[in-house]
Length: 145
Image (tube, rainbow, N blue to C red; front, side):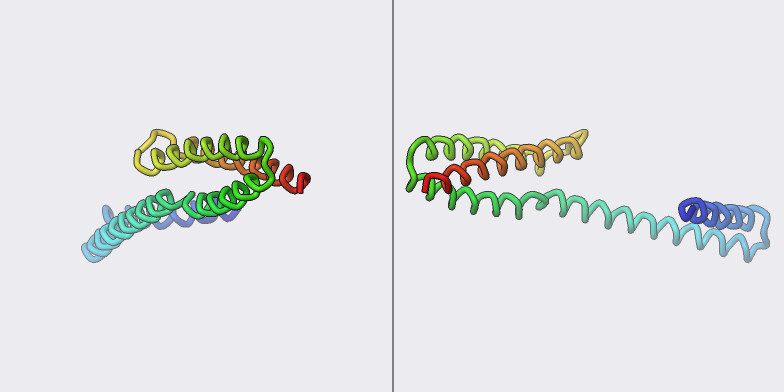
């Protein structure tokens, strides 16, 4: 309902501007052209701002999550070494997967892919899998202590 109302208001404003620019007095035409120019500049500024913010967001999107993941890996790795068994090997395999994820994130940051949403989803899924496996190892460590 709100979307239709907004669309209707925009349509009326555009129609009124168009009418004034083509059929209005000289003063109406000048005002219509000035409004059109200012609107074009405003839209251009907004688009530029959104692009810049999206680039900033994309470049640092996973940084915080990876810092937390690195900290968790460090803690789990130390505990796995203390407990022994096959836990250090499991942590090492998981660290290899994390390094691959790091490389994927770097590639995603530095390239203009056709479908960044799909790549971000892939990264999020892999990060989720890593966290689940890390949690399983932590539970195994707790059960052996």
